[in-house]
Image (tube, rainbow, N blue to C red; front, top):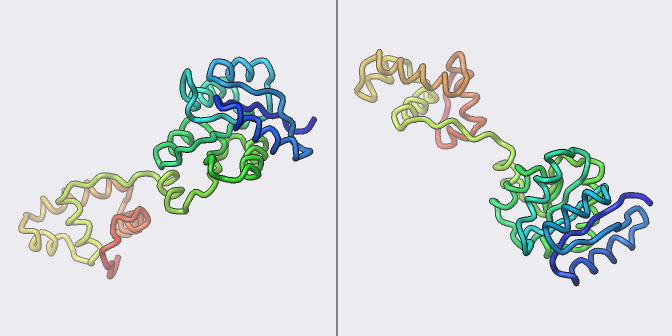
Length: 215
C-alpha cells in the first residue's frame, strides 16, 4: 500500500484534486478524507495513516488543533499543514504545534505530495515550501537577550576596544557603574569574558553597526 494519507479540508474540490495528485504517485495511497476538525480527528484515530494533510481553516476549528491532537500522543505520524495563509505567524505556529511541513495552496499539487513524503520519513522535522532563508533563521534562531539602553551603549564601546575606565569616561559614569553594566552584559550573553561576549553578540546580530577592533 505504500505511504497512507488522510486528507482534511472542508472544500471537496480541493480534497478531490489532492486525492488525484496522490493517486498518480504509486508510493502514496489516500485512505480517507474528512471535511471538518471532528471528522479529521476521528478518521485519524480510526485509520492511523502515515500522513495527515490538513487545511488550516476548518468549519469547526483550526487545523493546528489537528496537529496538536496528533502530537499529544503520537510522534511518528507526519502532519502537513495546507493553507492559503502563509504569513510568518502561521508558519511559526505550525512549527510550534509540531507540524512536519507547511505548504501554501498556491503551490503545485506535486509539492504537497513531496511534503507528505518528507513528513512520512521525518515527522518531527519541519519543511516549508517557499520559505525564505531569513524567515527560517527567525524561526529557528533564539531571540537575542534584551539589553537596557545603557548596556547596549557599553556593548558597542566594548566592541570598539575601550577599557572599563575609558567606557566610564565616555558615558560619564563611575568605573564601578561601568563594571556593573559589563557584568550584566556578560550574564545576559552567557559569557565569561569580553571575547566570548563579543563573539556571541555578533553571532546574534547585536553588533551589526559596530566595528570590533580588538578583543
